[in-house]
Length: 531
Image (tube, rainbow, N blue to C red):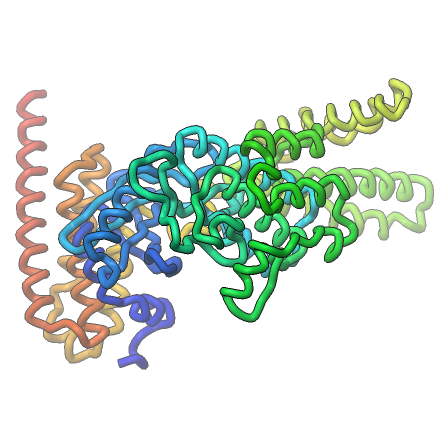
């Protein structure tokens, strides 16, 4: 049937795994699964929509084949432990659940990419960017360590970089443990990822906060050079290097990295725990001393600031040329129009990402202040110090506010580029179900002409409930019915479902629609009587 299926539905069909179907069945009405985000040794991560709050979340599922009594209990215990952590640089866990053989937890969805993906895509990061993300991860680890939680698997794949803010967030406490708990620390067992694990982990010895700092140092090494500190043909050889071979200096592979930053990474990679920083807070402090004061604006805003400064200078130069040399009028006009179009495009991108002018103004003023401090430290006079921040203050004032107001003309409600859809869950489900039905063989569609009507009715009922502010059981029931219809269509499309099952789903959906319509009608009558 592949020839009848559009590309987006082929992608969905490829994800039609037993785990996907079983989990969707268990959480229907509460969460609507969209696609698989990734798989690891201890779980499958899927993108989903929280029906009641209408937001994206990620669900990590322990594969049923791994869910023996021991792993199941450990998975639940560690997820609940991680759910108690609340820090700006740790991905939050909203709930931990088990339904029959299914064990999973629901966590915040980060609109971005992993550090591994960023380096693979763009190459090694700038030293100052690495300083910032190491400091943020160190803060997160310090917070976790103070609560007795050791991560034990810090690596580039477990550090998410938020697309809009650039913030680093620690993910996947999947093999974390609570320090000083009664249970042994997997002594004798190697736990973690070989390229980034500490010598004590590699030797199967007890771990502590300094083990995470070693892994963070190895991760920083990767971010700066594009490779791990040690490489080997097999895991045993790699573990042996962690245990016995001194780590190379970052500057051996990238000479432009500041010597102080290379020293900090080297201290994190000390063989003995006592040779490393005593805490994540101490490491963050050492990084902070190197970073000094800098603009803490999101990358997109910083990029616009640099563009605006250069463009403003060129714009004024073009005006001067046009006034003093009549022969250059056409050329100057061309430059001014091109720059204006470029700046408007940049401003609209920021607005579309959800930034307001107040966000941009604060960043401009902070940068102006930082430039003034630098000029003062260099011994510049008051006049030159003011000139250094001139462009920033100009854009932060009334001209900048007017420009962003004009640039935003005609724009719709901001939506974030990486989100699959900003529509309510029932709209997304209804659209998906209708697409699936439309691409079924014509013979099946003729036998079930009522499908679009049932889908539309459930979609309208859910919209009415949400509009009333009713995000409770009725809304969950309506969305679950829509989910059942979508799943039934998916199964028929993939050849793993029957027409009888789909017919039963449709009958139940009609019954649910009748019940919701009757209750909404009764509420409306009561409301009219009370007027």
